[in-house]
Amino acid sequence: MIKKGGIGVIKKYVLLFMVWFLGLNQVAAQDDAAKEPEYGWKNKAVGSLNLTQNSFDNWSQGGENSLAWQLNFNARFENNQEKYNWSNSLKLTYGMVKSGKEESKKSVDEIKLESVLNFNAGWFVRPYGAVNAETQFSKGYDYGAEPKVAISDFLDPGYFRESIGLEYTHQDNFKTRLGVSGKQTVTRNFPFYSDDPATPEVEKLRLEFGAESVTDVSQKLGENLLLVSKLELFSNLKSVQEIDVNWDTVLIAKVARYVEVNFNFKIFYDRDISVKRQLKQALSMGLTYSFL
Image (cartoon, rainbow, N blue to C red):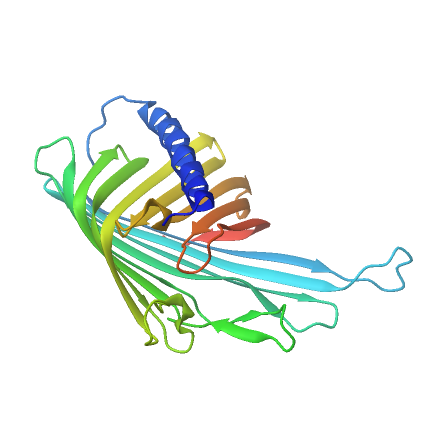
């Protein structure tokens, strides 16, 4: 039986998604002038380093020495042809923070790969096939426990999805797709990410089949301001309460040739991990460099 609170959470996400989708669709509809398609490979790779440091010596107002750093790498390799489009993306993020005499702690850690192949069949939408993988670099800990307790590691958990369906693309800044999907959650030492509590066995692999919806937008809001947002929804078709939500939005402001300010806001909901939605927010400024 679905609890009332769970339905309320899903209703909020559905309403939020509708408002977000309509707003982005309106943005994507702007500048609707026809453009000649550009065929061939278009590659882009951007890396950035963000640093925050504070040091105090005989400071009467108090304070604690601290150091935080974060490395980001984003790459996109896209081959656009008359009959098909093959798009590949890679996102790598890792950061640490140290405050006072405490040990260094991990602040962010993400590895995400996606490959999408769609075919131009002369329709309003295009048939597509996609694969997606997501995990982290190193071990994560719960620092609320004493002593600290390891709760995650590389490919522990690891998330994999495969899907086929139909995709709609508006120019280069708006894509949305809907299809049938398979999802695998793999673990080694932390099976609470994959275990089914309804069975006596401890499963280290969870297989799910359902429907997938993915929407991407990349829109310039000004000469030096870029919005990049990705909304991923997965349903195993068992219950509206079990719709997985992964919504990652980044606002990038370029203040100098090699200096950028980034604001990242992420919403994550997976009832198999937590019945409450998870939020992550980060504001950073640092050096950035385009490799391609």
